Length: 165
Image (cartoon, rainbow, N blue to C red; front, side):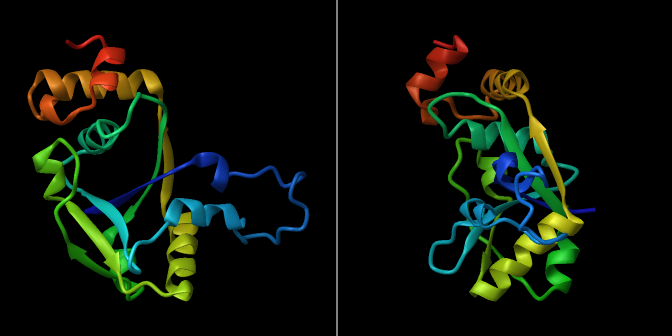
């Protein structure tokens, strides 16, 4: 199975029903759209395959940050998105891992309605997860030490916080 990964913030997707009694069952809070920001009606996602694991993808995405922290994401079967008529096209990613970059896709020609559809699909058919800060640091260190992640493209502040010189 080929899946699609999109980074999120879990606290926007998991709400206490007692704090949001106005929200209807199955409805999503508007905050989820902060995780689905678009540029030119496109949203960036990464393909997860047998060759490119969640671990490698999380490490690559975390390597673009100033510091390591928890990494939250949704992943969903690519065929679910395609069967919902969401359009995906490959485009080169911008992480320090060239292999992961080749698995970058844009979901494109997104209208407000199709963005809502994407949010609903992620919520109802996707799997949300968190990689702890400790594991993110381990993934980053492994990626840099194995040279899968190009150290020269990682911010000095992150390298310093990882204890890598």
